[in-house]
Length: 176
Image (cartoon, rainbow, N blue to C red):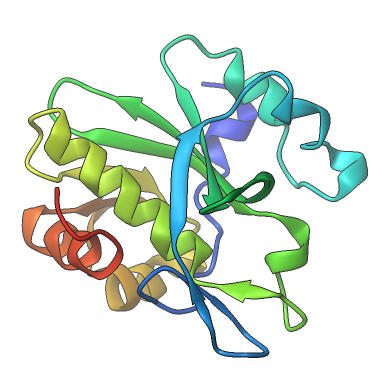
């Protein structure tokens, strides 16, 4: 296992919204989720403030990296997620909000929740009943139990089962 695979999820679920919400105006914006492209990678760099090496993530053949954008504004990426479809669930490897959506001065809230809901939706689409797994940082286990309805199954492994997945999907998507 590579060192970065041991890091674990360390994103805070700021709030569950119906899409993403502008923290200043309170306006909600519908979102699209699609695979990132090589062109997108030019903007997703540590120099631009991104925490993870998404180029390396995209090179992993068993993983797909998706971007979250606002409908009709595909050029600005709001967040990213790396997913692997396993034989009976979807595994979330990484998730990250764009630098301007982090911290106390963030522009939009709801990005991490939106991306996790997408992972749950993908799990249903692939016939895995919404089951999603991820490795959490130890200090965030209780946060994920409370915010996502995830279950702690041992060590730092967490799962989102069908019931919790449906709640997230219904929050962010009109249908599965």
